[in-house]
Structures are given as C-alpha cells and as structure tokens.
Length: 397
Image (cartoon, rainbow, N blue to C red):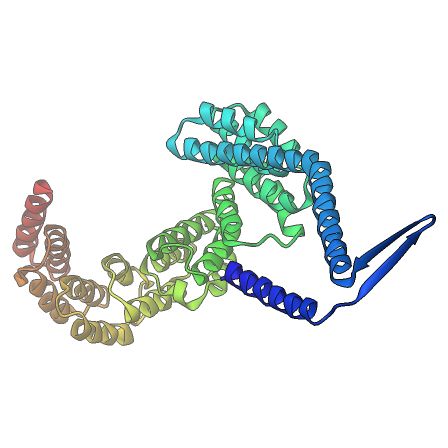
C-alpha cells in the first residue's frame, strides 16, 4: 500500500512538471566573466532538481557509512543479549530438571551480560544452594546490586535459609523485607515455617489466620496448624488456668468450634481444676458438631456432689441431635451413675449394649459402668457378670 501511494505521488509530480515545462519557454543567462551561459528555464530547474537528488543520496550514503560502527555495535549487543537470554532460559530449565551443576554453568555464562547480570545471579545462587555450596550461594547474592532486585534477593535468601533449616536467619531476613513493606503471601509462608520450627506458637496462629484469609492454605492444613499451636500453648501453660483462659478467649470463634482444639483446651482446663469452664467449652463445641472424644470427656467435668440435672437434659437433647451415636447414651449413663440416678443410668448403659452401632470399646465401657452400678446396688452377681464381659471385650481389642 505504501509503495502504491509513492508511485501515485511520483506520477502526479511528473504530470505537473510536464505541464509546467510545456507552458514555460523562458531562458536564464548566467554570467561567469568572461563566460556567459544561456539556459532554458526548464533545463535549469531540471539541473537544480538533479543536484538536489545527488546531494541527498550522497549525504545519506555518507551518513550510512559513518553509522556502520554503531550498527555493528548494536548488532553485537543484540546478539549478546540473545545469547544471555538463551543462557537464562537454559538455567531455569535445568533448575526445574534438577540438574543444578548445568544450571549454575548456564547462569554464570548469562551473568556476563550487564543487563541480565542480576537475574543470572539469582539463578546461580539458587543452583549453588541446591548443590549445598552455601558460600558460593552467598557470593552470587552479593553480586546483586540493582535496587529493584533487592526485594527478590531477600525473598530468595529467606526461602533458601528456611530450606536449609536456618529458621533464625530466615526470620532475620524477613524482618528486613518487612521494613520495606514485604508482606506478600510467599514471605508469610516462609515465616510460618520458620516460626513452627522455632516453636513460636502464638505467631504460628497469627500467620495461619492471615494466610487462611487469603486462601493461601488448604483448610485441612489450617486446622492442623491451629490444633498443633493450641496444643503446644496449652502444654506450655498447663499449670496456669488463667493463662489457658486467656489463650481460649483470644482464639477466633471459628477456632473455638474446632473439636480438636476444644478437646486440647478442655483437657488442659480439667488438669487445672477448671471443671465448669471445661464443661461449657465442650458444650459449645458439641452444639456445633459431633466429636466422640469430647463426648467421652464430658462426664468428667463434675465434682463429687455437684448437681448435673441441666447437663443431663443437655445430653437428652444431644441424643435427639445425634441419634446414630451410641456414645451419647454412654455419656448419659455415666453422668446419671455419678448423680446416683440408678434407673436412668441403667437404661442408658443397657441401650448402648443393645445398639448394633456400638463399637467394642464403647460396649466395654458400658459393661464396666454397669458393673460398678450393680456393685453400688449390692448386686454382686450382676456386677461380676458385667466385669467378665468387659474383660472379654478388652481381650479382643
């Protein structure tokens, strides 16, 4: 299209020049004493145009000749950049392929190009780290001088430090990142791993919640981290019920509803004698979801002589909510036994034995409590029978 327009322009120009020349019969006299030259005006115009064209062509040719060194340098630079990019691509591919020696060699070759030197140094440091050449890794990282690459350098360093199980150094590097506003998901993941290794459980909880809000952790892993952190915190404060309560109150509501978390905290509170608080905690969790371990723990949340009528009613409610769980009946029987409600206890425990869904351990517990109930009622033969049946079930486990 462009060439067609040029041809049209030249054709139009030629037509205009021809028309102008045919209508112009003037002459021009040029004096160069003692010489005189007579020319037609049209010839003079032609000569001037020709001189202009020759001048332009000569100037362009001269400029092109002068520009040859620059073009040659630009070509060589472009070629070197292409080679460096090829080495960068090779280094990346070799790192993913696990051939770290080849990756290091390719990255070293790419580092000869100033424009890609920092990127090559990052790749070389990663390859050296994988080869366990930590001094060489640090040397490559020190070569990264560009200000816009410092963030990448620190992130890579923290990740590699954590990979080498140097959690303290990784957190120190992350602290430098955070001074510059580095709070992205990947950095928080590294910080989470470091704090887990250093057993900083309060920080583990904070980071787990932060990553969970961004969908950066699988829900199963979120629950696992929370359960582990709470369990370790409870162990650390196992003799301080006020500290345990403080931990519990600082947990988000969704964490308190996790049955494993509630179980760990309830056991900790029971160990410090906080029976009422443990009971309320278990009730809150079981109202939200079923958990067999919590149900087994529930009857242990009473002191001798303490009334449990409201809690018996709560168990009756749970029997309606969890009709397929024989352990509710077992817990009800145990609690009624503690309250010396012999009749209701006997009915509940016998119901466990009749329920085909009852697991062997649940049946063994029912036999054991029935034996104790019959002993309390001075029914020795019945007590002996249930003790024997309980022992028989335990023997098969």
